[in-house]
Length: 242
Image (tube, rainbow, N blue to C red):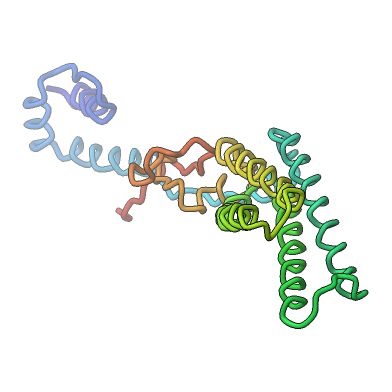
């Protein structure tokens, strides 16, 4: 076998192509031919230098893209409705606080303090609903609080109605909070299905999405990765220096 045929076969081998002559013959020729041995070493070094190299640093443009990207308008009517209920709740709380400061509540002592606590709670609840109307990703934190409050309130309201402590009109005044709970759930569900770019849910930091190196969803996440996923390089590999 001449050196030209040997080097042609070696080149095909490095390219994972079919060799023109049997591999055993090529190997015997390389073992006995110093020029072909030297050519093989140099060819392998050149191939390694061309195909394997360190990944180049690229600028992280995620924050800049998210900053200028328009926020999705999906679920906007529900959030506007929630904002309206929040404003109504704030009006009720402010009315209670003004009545307390002007002494028109008719309560004194411990009863007056309890009235003030209720007014403060209504004010805080209204502010929380207003925040969720602006930041949908916060809905999940307020949902269990409002749900628990309404569950306890419903039990007490039923008892007070039966015993005659309160009137039906007073119980009906809590209906906006029930509406707020429904709207809060709708906002929370809409955000989980279509996360806003840049929010914790979208970037996979809210505990619901466990993203692997190739950008897939980890089975430990329960298969709930409906939203946007963080993407990682799939072809980048670490190599040791030759």
